[in-house]
Amino acid sequence: MTYPGLPAVLPFLDCLSSLKTTPRTGWLYHGIEHPESIADHMYRMGVLCMLCTDPKINKDHCVKMALVHDMAESIVGDITPHDNVTKEEKHRMESEAMEKIASQLIPKNYAANAQEIQALFQEYEAAETPEALFVKDVDKFEMIAQMFEYERKYAGEKNLEQFTWAINIVKHPQVRGWAEEVLAERKRFWEQLKTNTPAAASNESSKN
Image 1 (cartoon, rainbow, N blue to C red):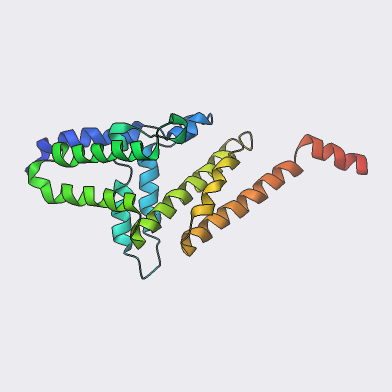
Image 2: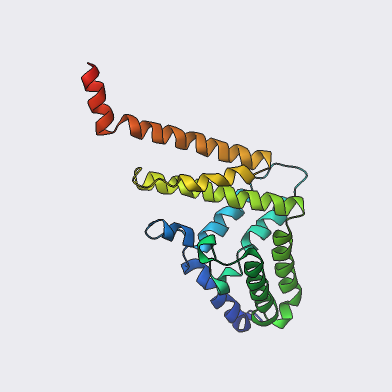
């Protein structure tokens, strides 16, 4: 069996492959060894979007958007505030990358598909539709969940509290509920660690 157009799609696949190997930069800045890749982040966002229960939101559209929203990073990399790149410049760089992907890397016989991918990216960036706003909230929640995973992985040796700011901009009630649950569990985690520290144990012994 042959698949028409498969060889021509290889440049697109080669571009996307970098998403599987490029780590999320923010975690590297905090000393996380072998952190999640951009593709890891996008995949879990896509799955989380499948859990959307809001009847006013097209969850299938959200899944597609989640899988596209960071696609430009396959070319420009994961740009963070530490890189001293303005939001306007970041948007310009990523928009140009998506234009290249859609017009040069995706084969011409898939023009309609390329147009859909680029439109999904633009919709996410504009953040005006219910679906785009939902996916942006999922993006922040996934970061919060990943933060807590790393804190548990390092058994409290790394405090990544600075990432908790993200809950302040999560608006959708379902996603905010997820974030609140994670942060409540995180609070219990850190309280338990403090209870089990040698200093805490010593203080308890002195009371007895």
